[in-house]
Every structure is written in C-alpha cells, then in structure tokens.
Length: 404
Image 1 (cartoon, helix red, strand yellow):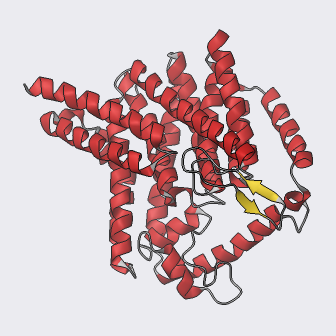
Image 2 (cartoon, helix red, strand yellow):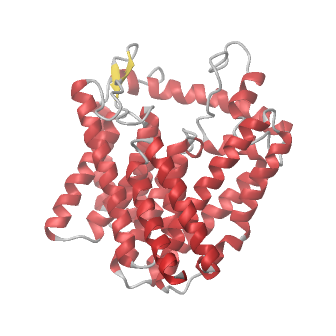
Image 3 (cartoon, helix red, strand yellow):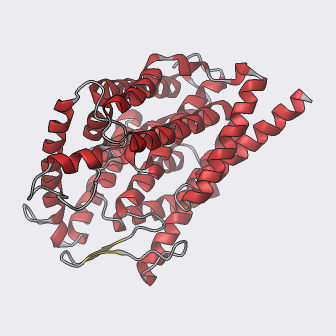
C-alpha cells in the first residue's frame, strides 16, 4: 500500500508540475491549484520516503537566503505584507523542490521542457491575436497604449508588457539552444518556427530589458560554442531593430528608452537611502513600495502613485532583505551556474548537455533583465525563476559526478 501511494503521489506531483508550467503565463488561479496539489503530493512523498528529498537543500546559500528573508520581517513596517511575501517565497521554494525531486529521467525532463516551450508559444500566438484585434483571447486585455510615444505594447495574457518580456525572454535561450545545437530534421524546423514566433513577440512587447537579456544569452552561446556567426546575426538584428523601432523610443537623449533608464536611476538613488536604514537584514520582505513612498518627495518617480517596484531586482532585494540576503542570492546563482557549466562540459548525453547550456542562457537573460525590472518580485516571473532553478538542479538526478 505504501509503494502504491508513493507511486500515485509521484505521478500526481509530476503532472501537477506540468499543469503549473503550462498555465503559469495564462491564469494565476489555475497555477495556484497546481501549486497546492504539487506541494501536497511532494510532502506526502517525502514523508513516506525521506530519501526522495534532495540533499542540496542543506547547502548554505539557499538556507541563508530563506533564513534572511524570514529575519527581514523584524524590520518590516507592515508585518502582514511581509508574511504574504514569505508565504509566496516558500510556495515557490517547494515547487522548486518538487521539480528537482520529480524529474527522475530524461523522458520526464523532455516532457516538462516541451510544456514550457509550448506554453510560451501559445502565449505568443495570443500576443499576435492581441496585436491585430486589440485584445488578447484569454482575459480580453487591451494593448498597453502609450499615446505620447505613438506605440501600443503587447501584453498577451500578462498584466504588463514587461512581465511578458521577462517570461518570453527567459524561455527563448532554451528554445534557441535546442534549435541550434540539438534537434534535426522536421523537429528542428518546427522549433525554429516556434523560436521565431517567440522572438517576434519579444520585439512587439518593446521590453528593453528582455532584449538586452536575450542578446547577452546569444553572446554567451557564441562564446561557449565558438559560433561567431551568432554575434553577426545579433548585430544585424540590433541594426534592423534600430531602423524598425519608432524614433520616440530610440532618439538620444530624449527617446523613451533612455528617459526610462534615467528615471529608474532616480528610483535606485532613493532605494540606496532605504538600504542604508537597515543594511544587513533589510526593511522587510514585500515592503519596498510602502517604504519607497515614505522616502520619495514631490518630483521623484511614482511619487503619490501607489507602491511601485524598484525596476531592478538586485537593489529591491537589498532594500527588502538586506545585503546579506543579496549576497546569499548571488552565491546561490553562482552555485547553479557552476553546476550547469560542469554538466555541459562533463556529460555525454546530448539533450542534457544542450539543455544545461540553454538554462545558463536563460538565467543570463533573466538576471540581465533584472537590472531594469524587478523580475523576482512579480508572482509569475518569480515562480519562473524557481522553475528554471528546479530544472537545473534536476540534472543532478542523472548520475553526473557533480554536487551542488
């Protein structure tokens, strides 16, 4: 009976994860249902067989990140907000654990990667629908209109065009790596079409951080594989984008892109003041917006307009959970990068090798975008980070001689 229950929970957890990944960019309510079931089944699995719990959770960076996030509540100006943030963090962390423990073979890994790519493709088709009809087909959201710039930004099923850019920008490197370095024949053609659609939607979202992130990932691919033609294609793409994009975005120094960056630099200056108040443990998880409004003055960005994000996940992290929290996060990322690079160099399994390269590219894109957006502080984008981390750690299940 115990073995039967264990197998049932294992399958239920796995397909719940597929459900989460597919609906992540579409419906938060569906994603929440999947999270609840996946976590429940994972906890039952671990209680029945403790050896199934990944041993890497004992490593100090991830433990330190969680502990400091909890301790930041001591300085919180709104404990209820911080508890909400801590609850979300722990839910995402358990999804991360469920993925790391649930992907036990290549077949499962390929299945979930396919779900991730197919979900992004469906959302991209929704973006095209929104572009031509004015509303997306999932939630009837209109295009984001910027009348002073003469543009309309695609959001697809997301609330913001920036969130769409974060998601698609993080998926493109995985899709691109599998297209360039793994698949052949008809599958290569189909994934090539899918990748082209994703890139097209990224352009129509007018998300500069996502564009910078994907560009950084492509440069990394070119260096890792010594495929310098990729940099040539990237340069041609940048040149083409310069002529295609509206002048209201690209003019120096008054174009929207440059003015946006200047405005965010002003926000970051205020955030530095926030960090100075509680530099080690921060001012409380999930409280950046409240504290920002306390410190900003008339004339500052977002003054009196409600709690904003910092538009930089690193300075927001330092403000909320302190420099200790930021340091532990960087150490966590460094550990994941080191593991993925070792797997890429050591494994002979072509799919795992290519995926490890693609995941490094995804993290590069995500973390680069995080310099202009608070990627880790929006619910969908935060969960995507932990999903990608779960994929990365799951590669340890394939008997590769490397530890986290």
